[in-house]
Length: 203
Image (cartoon, rainbow, N blue to C red; front, top):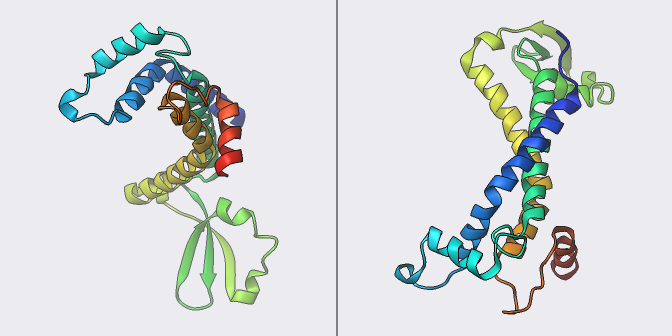
């Protein structure tokens, strides 16, 4: 069976993120509205009461319970696309039983993943550092701890990269769904326009 195309994972992640955003956005609107409420806890409305207030005032549309939908689509879609696309492709590039061994000329040795070295193997003259390269099959796939660390490291890198790319959409979502700087005057409306405004005014 032929393995999936590398783009398949990214497209699947994008699709799942967009679907998730459509379902989650009304809850995000209510959550942000409640978080921005500075009244005492006993005076704050419940989640369902707040949702009812938003629907009564502005309806279900992009000014009401689905306010900021474009930014939420961008936040979830981009995050899932980058995360799943990076994770599964890198996981396939770094198989459990194919490592590259770097051995010092002393009795100690270091194991590093082949993919991590592939970038600079042909640029760094390793002999200058007293290192010797040799391929070595390993049994990491049979070691639960090493296999966990392998997947944990790839997942951590995937989440970090996805979060960095995703942050502008998250900022735009919070600005659109949160209270506006001047009451009664809408400053943040659309996703990319909000990003441009924040970048221009705040960097």
